[in-house]
Length: 368
Image 1: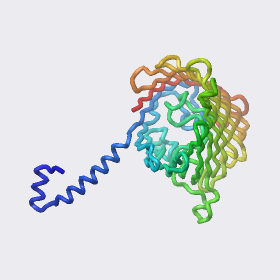
Image 2: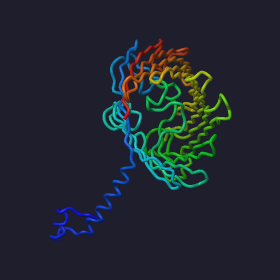
Image 3: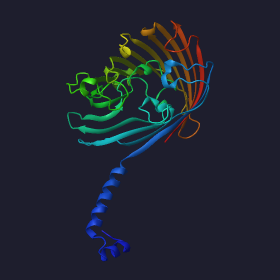
Image 4: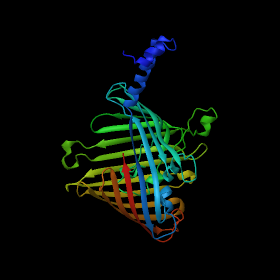
């Protein structure tokens, strides 16, 4: 090992030893080696919205907005993904800043200044084809859509997404049986998005029978199935308490995606059934149909038909959404989306509106 003149002079004066320099250098190299495997990514999400109503659409949760300009969210991801090793290890942290962080344990002002979306340790055990594990805070394992706008065919969320769990504190494992079938299963403190929240029986020292349980299966059609090749069927369930002393809620999910004989056109379907919603002994059932067409390398068109039966309030809703994606600048996804929501039956208690609502949104997302 080579030392610079300043290090040699300090060692000669007795202020430091060469041994300590070597140890410090080795420790530093270890830290730098670990950091060199960490990736940094994220995005900034903004929007301009016109709405013909001054009432926020309550069916859209935190996304219910009236006319104006918005910072939606800034997301930063630090991750060391699992490599191909039998005993691979890594981690992931998703940090949110901005109004949309209100969904994930916000710290700060009422509009959700900071939030933690995910923070888990990832490991692999050499069991069969390899069992991948996550311990900590992670995304729910069910659903057609995700929190990240750019990861969805449409900018606004479906009715079903707003009735699904979003985040769990617990342990989940994923195992790929073969090219066709994979499954996930795990346990969590509760089914809702409150980090480290525990069910009351666990806090009282009982056996924790009120823990939440998660399971899903994915079946992918192989190349030998011809036109169906690449199609996928998803089945999932989350059952558990909606809070420390809350009521048990069960979410069932069925989804599917498939290509079509038309080049660039894909179809999807998502069915969500939330049973005993927040202890109301009522269901919230939704069905969404999706169509996406990749017209050019830069332009895509997306459509969604969305239906919700809110049993607790005897309401039924219908929504039609059309989205145009265009990648005009590098790393920037620009979207123009029109959405129409209609109360088909009932009084519109949950949605907060009695008449139809139309909105037009320009969305810009810079991803890095």
